[in-house]
Length: 452
Picture 1 (cartoon, helix red, strand yellow):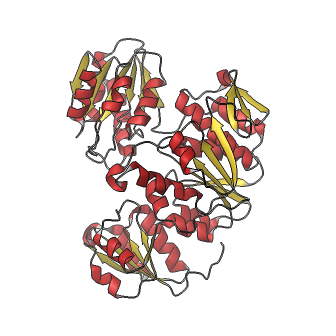
Picture 2 (cartoon, rainbow, N blue to C red):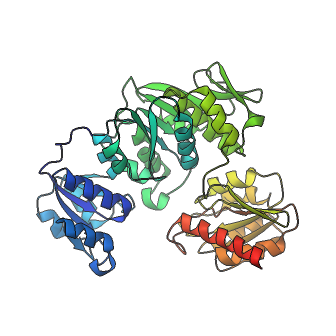
Picture 3 (cartoon, one colour):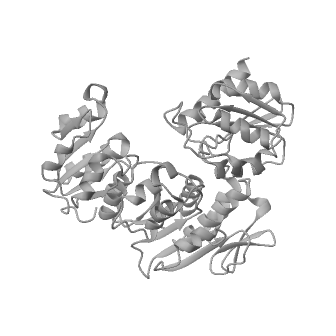
């Protein structure tokens, strides 16, 4: 661990627990900081807070009182999900107190180089691919961030013989100041999380912070098919490594005559790649660009691409029942992700969609809905998706209560050869704690079909 004394005797307020807040609190306490934890959940319902209190950490639960700022506070570590409109956060910024997220801590203590991946869609798949591609290639890769263990926990144990591969969100990146990956990957930008960021420009600015501290010796991997990404990367220091599914970018990763190349090196024929879909081809090119930049062996990359079938909850094959294939794409929490999932199949698709209403319309989803056989919809956005499906000319539209009810309804609507796809195009928080829980409920409902 690097610079172990940097937090000693500093006064740190950790705002919000969950996994990242607890990990940051424990790390800072071990490094000699004076830590105060503040979480909105009452103490009696908060086992994490009680555990931290037994260590000797000061814990304030049940609300976010502004009086916490009357005590010495050198900086705040904020849970990424807490908005900057939170009165305590807003007041801290007004007073000139630094507010960061735990990935900032990870960057400050890590002895290992970091590969950081962000974008509206494809982060988890790309992160997983990079980790797998870097195996058996010298330094041992460690996965961190939204996809796995909290980044600061991984960074605490990492050495210079590791490479930390971390998925980072716009929420996390907005709370960074010195965050410094060796390789920064920006996959794409779509109108997502506007309830948090307000505008696409603000959202893009948060994502672009992944580039903020790069030097001329670092690398940035960017999707040159995405005009917004290209614009955000215009002033970046470092060595550009582009990727494209449509252009022959000989300084990066690209496709030429159905063959994938990195620079002038032939990597693999597209027909030998297991992972389906154009969106996954973009993820693959980004992963190759990042992995090769960090020393991955071509043989390992080819092995991964011939065997990797996807990550859990991301166009994840579940089961075939009476010649109907079920796919779990619960991680598709926006329209672009669901569009990509639908376009990955040539077979008739029965789509299960719906969830948290963030205030956006589903007009952009209509062209993709024109390709589906039936829509089964649920959650807060049920009426909006029904309207979009009707506009798209979908013949069969069925509203149901939730994912569990959607599965048997979809099966009854299907015939042999159909794809039954959960790709909600919405976040899960109206009915489920996480997209993972929603995906697990889908898989369980599929298992119940077998019993039926």
